[in-house]
Length: 113
Image 1: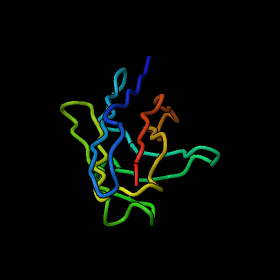
Image 2: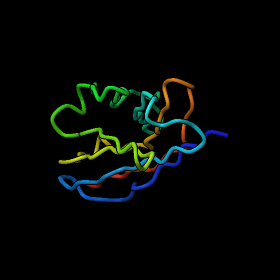
Image 3: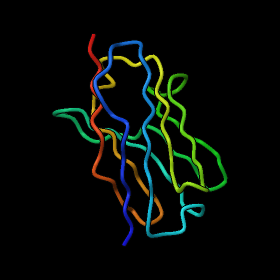
Image 4: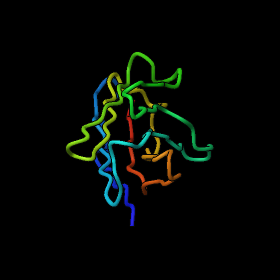
């Protein structure tokens, strides 16, 4: 059974940084295209970043220049480094395995102004 488990969320102030992690189990991680989405209260889930099995990366405009997605295939883990956080980044962040269309349960990020 494939599992995606996120961690690293929390409450921080505007301008701070956080690094989210997503550990994948139950499948061959290094062949997966992985990504991060987020959902703010009362809003639809939106794309944040994606990293292909090749290492190529895509970002939402809101993430460009502040967020960096990366992966460690030896640890079956995908990361999202978030810098210069803003109150509008407040959301639950979800890990996504695009190949098998699986989601993690999310980790809450709250940014205070």
